[in-house]
Image 1 (cartoon, rainbow, N blue to C red):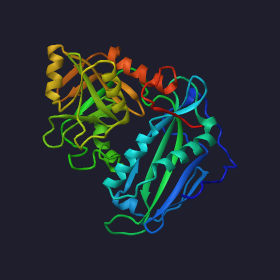
Image 2: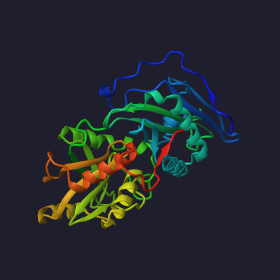
Image 3: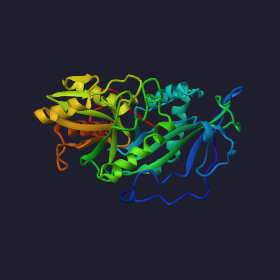
Amino acid sequence: MEKIKFLRNENPSPKPKDEELGFGNIFTDHMFVMDYDVDKGWYDPRIIPYGPFEMEPSSMVFHYGQAIFEGLKAYRNDKGEIVTFRPMDNFHRMNRSAKRICMPEIDVDFAWEALKTLLNIEKDWVPSAKGTSLYIRPFMIATDPFLGVRPSNTYKFFIILCPVGSYYPEGINPVKIYVEDKYSRVARGGTGEAKVAGNYAASLLSAEKAKDKGYSQVLWLDAADHTFVEEVGAMNMFFKIDGKIVTAPLDGSILPGITRDSVIKLAKHMGYTVEERRISIEEVFEAYEKGTLEEMFGTGTAAVVSPVGLLGWKDKIIDLGLDRIGEFTKLMYDTLTGIQYGTHKDIFGWVKKIN
């Protein structure tokens, strides 16, 4: 691979105050870009000023949806160092997504070097207040100017950066989740296990319906008969039932979340029983009625761990309280964020420094 070129932004943006940060609406001064051609492979890696770029209206991404992305974070730890959390796992997952929809894979080691280079340039954008971070968005799009259903022969790969506060306005407080029993996001054998842009477009209608009902997110059930729990729009879902940690299995229809995997590894290390199995929505409600449903929470890069205080399904409600966080949920949140920010020991070697 060629050496990464660097073009400095001569008109840098003012950096926001940490307390003013939201999520997803402020971007740093530079971005990483490289191009792909079926005959040349990946070429022209460069870090350039963040900003608009030209594309043909006939670019295939606009018409046939070849677009994938990832999400990870950089943190300023308690020593002031800038670190990332399991970045190689994100790039490996991106390659699995690419393979699923006939896009070219990236060299994982080169992608990591490109990210480190970009982060070193943008290090002053990494916020330092508690709970803040620099969100990292690698993505790839098809760019052939062609109308016709086939894989593109050309692509662009980007990494953009975004300083963020907490993903949810409620912060670590419990959220309200609506169970979708009409629409399906994906089906087994489809693209659910890939981080494909179209999966998220398919979730928007139900998300708006949930918002109108006063809920924060949607819990999806299996596409076959809307019986079994799958995942929330931006999170994998967990239940603590009678002392055991239960989550849906990776059977091809849900995203293999990196935070999900981290929680499972931590829980097992701490001596908890973890069950990766199919769990019906009826079983969840029956556990609540029996008094054995102790906690509910979601996991994801953006939210890390998000407690679920209320779950609505048809005319039924599970109310574990919007003013309390379960003991295990808080343990996972505190442990994961502690590892990320350097206040807890990183026993699994998940944290990677950028220099």
